[in-house]
Amino acid sequence: MILVTAGEMQAIDRRTIESFGLPGRVLMENAGRGASQILLEQFSGVKDRPVGVMAGRGNNGGDGFVIARCLHQQGIRVVVYLLANRQRVKGEAADNLKLLQPLGVPVVEIPDENTFNRHKQAMTAIDIWVDAILGTGLKSTVKGYFQTVIDFINSQHRPVLAVDIASGLDSDTGQICGTCIRAAATATFGFAKTGQMLQPGVHWTGNLEVIDIGIPPHIVKSVNPRQYLVIPRRVRSCLPPRPEDAHKGTTGHLLVVAGSRGKTGAASLTVSAALRAGAGLVTLASGAGTNTVAAARTMEAMTTLLPEDEQGAIAESAFDLVVEQMNGKKCLALGPGLGQAAGTQRLVRRIIAHSPIALVVDADGINALAGHTHILKKASAPIILTPHPGEMARLLDTRTMVVQQDRIGCARDFATEFKVHLVLKGARTVIAHPDGRVFINPTGNAGMASAGMGDVLTGLIAGLATQGTNPGCAALAGVYLHGAAADSLAAAMGPHGYLAGEVLRAVPGEIKKIGHHHP
Image 1 (cartoon, rainbow, N blue to C red):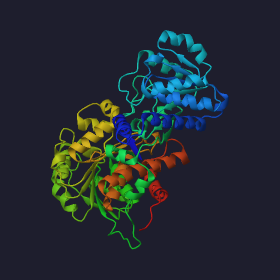
Image 2 (cartoon, rainbow, N blue to C red):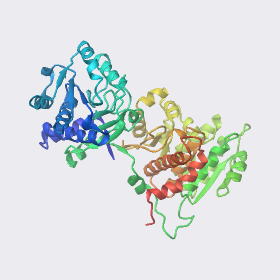
Image 3 (cartoon, rainbow, N blue to C red):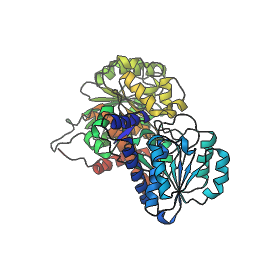
Image 4 (tube, one colour):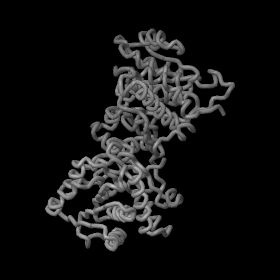
């Protein structure tokens, strides 16, 4: 499913009007008519409830004028509250505003806060609001008069249909620009906007419906949006085929370098998740303490011992043995529970720089790269990094808040600069690829804020890559299945309290739901 930024949507609209020749007036008509239908479908009893259209003077307001006309023509009581004087409305918006007069649709001009206050009492009688105040181009903080209006609508606790995007929502990042309409539903035009699929934007968007306004496919292709929502059909195409005559020798051998004293569970979860994802063989390379515990927990895996330092951390001298163990393996999962001993971190950086096989790097593997990201440019094998926002901030030498304010931008810039596949974990995980494409994952829930979940994800991605799935697809499918398994557990058990080990055991059922078949 394609997602667009504000700039991409503006380019699509402009090319549709200028090069294809579809007038802006037609696009606005299609948008408004589609949105009015969404309002009728989303909210019950509309024909018996007064509707208020709060409209700005731009094209977002113009869409609102079309909605008001369509509702009026269906016998619905509707009032337009224009946040400007009529003469300030221009272009197609002005044309649609004029059409309201012969129909007798009330238009109340409230160009300033004093006028707004005089009409506030009458506006409390509105049962359903249409938010047509601000459009997708908003970047600055909403304050002053518009803030007063938005806060008033929210305070009424009435259902709101947002036109294209909830006013106050950054359409690219999903961040709130000071204040924001809390929409029960949003009718967006052409394509969903990236900010509507990210947190916190998804929360303020409500039920999202995409309206086809007549944009030709070749126009979209010429603009080439690079953001997508992960959907089951794409995940299905990413899953490795499993022929009837498959055996463990043909479904890949994974090497896992993980674990340390007190963190043996991370290694076990990674190994088990890879096997649940379908990897044929898994070898865990770790220190003696981790090996003993992991072997008892995961009987299906093989183990090999790596030298340790006096504190029980894997020593830098393990490098040659790790390289030897890579022989015959398809992928290496590196980092869960390794600890941050200086020698271990040096080992991790050497492995990343010299590995001949694909790498999935997580946790302490990522921490070892902080301040040393140049190592990534030395690597020749494909690399998948799976940082949470704090780890991402350390990679970028910035604050976690900066990462969270622009998750797509941070992930995409890093992935393209260092030519890695980057999984930025968290609510609505972002998967960025070296070519600049970005995917937003819709699965998962707050119950995943629990120990071991990241280790499971590492194993799932590595297990898929081990079977021959290309790294980008392995990252995408692993993230989706991870969240989907947790969603199924939340539905069956409750919103939280399920464990990481239960998530990995639920993965085969999610693969079945996706509809993976034998070739």
